[in-house]
Image (cartoon, rainbow, N blue to C red):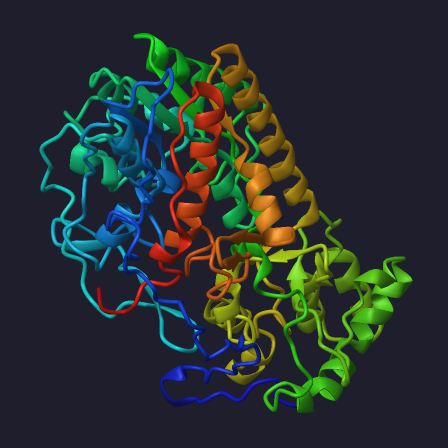
Length: 539
């Protein structure tokens, strides 16, 4: 059998075969890095009308409660420029025009991003655009989480927080960071190691609040490719894993308690639902069929690959599952090979059939192990953004595993090319069944948020509808158009998950529109030109 990829025996390290290489547009359009103020604004990116009123709201002490969507996390990190362009900070600047007070944030040390724990990097620096794609800034974080800040802080957005984390004592205890029991970002600004996020927020006696929480209760499951569990029916969050979907009843109970706490003193506020994460660039950038026959590292191997899979495809047909056949086209873009855990595992049947066909027991067994739940991806499958860096590359864990079965390194390498001969693992693909779980949980959470907003007569922002519109048709924001393309869409940052500065400004305008409608204020919108689409390397 011919090599699928070349390998070097020196140091027993396989050479990388780069089959998939996402091509980025190299030209930056005018206005991409715009961040200056225009002649008719107040220098903060906010247009100042002649007379501004707060209506029945009181913005004098505004507190924001949420997660990374409100903390200012963007480009895969938390850093000062991102924090200053966070949705709550944009709102607070505008609230100042209608009697709002000072708005403090637990600022990072610099614009590098990332975190240290006792000198060790536990979160990487921010992403930058190098002209080809998003890459990590070549710098070392300087923000040490044990250097606790002196609060209180108006922006209580905690990156990574799920709904129930906001009521969890000890979530800001540094001792729990290594085990995942606490949050390194909250450690920096918690009033004490045993406090809760909501306790620190309520202690400030807010006159107005925003609450945008719940995204991570389903989001981490999605971004992990569905490797977590759907905890529907499990009412004990202390037993949840980091990538699990929160039970809707747990979410409803927690959310109701958060709103009760924030409104106990009569404060008014605005709440937002959570977006359909399946529409964000993290899931829409990498196509299901990224293997090009024109790629010189892949195209010439297609006849050999099809010959290799021919016997397996005959077995699939005999077992009544011809749709699992693996065939690569020499003229069209090719789907990757994935492992679909929702399929019946046919490992034993494949092994037995191949042995009956004359294949030796060892090879037949390996084919059964590798392809018992394998198929080629289709347009209903969503590949996560990080998969772009491993498709077509040798899977070193697979190489070692196959060599452990006695295969020579070269043969092990042939059967270990991610998405070609080695099915992409579950963490790289969100299957349709997993997508359905995400959508059902999102719908349940959003129903809770809407009903609690109505019951408490709060302003409500349908962020789900906003994100859907950005993804499906794009939206106009002053003289700019925002869509959900990675890098150049204008709405999302380089991590493909969090909005960029201009995206945050657009969302802030939607918040203000809802606030104006509910409370009779006339907060003016911010202007798109004052918020950049991409942060430059040097800040």
